[in-house]
Length: 86
Image (cartoon, rainbow, N blue to C red; front, side, top):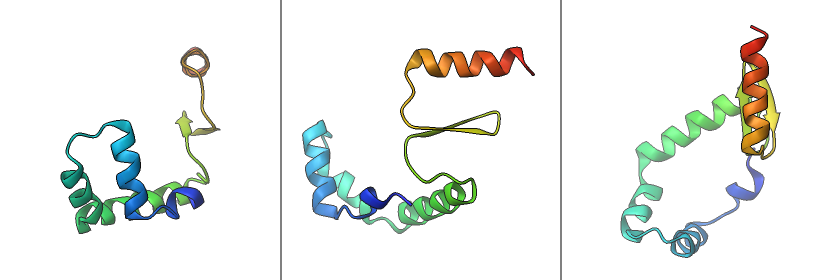
């Protein structure tokens, strides 16, 4: 599924965490190594695959997939459309 994300090793995640300013790198690494977190990610990945999600970001509104980054205005328009047409 998340082909590029899946190829990132722990060191890469640490570099990204440092670049975006995560203050507690040790806690972040502990989270990466946590069995509970790993299990949750696997459950989420199986759910995404069952829904046909093949890339991120993907939004689901009213059971319809919207693949790719939507602007706030686009997402607002989608939600308003479905609210009007319920």
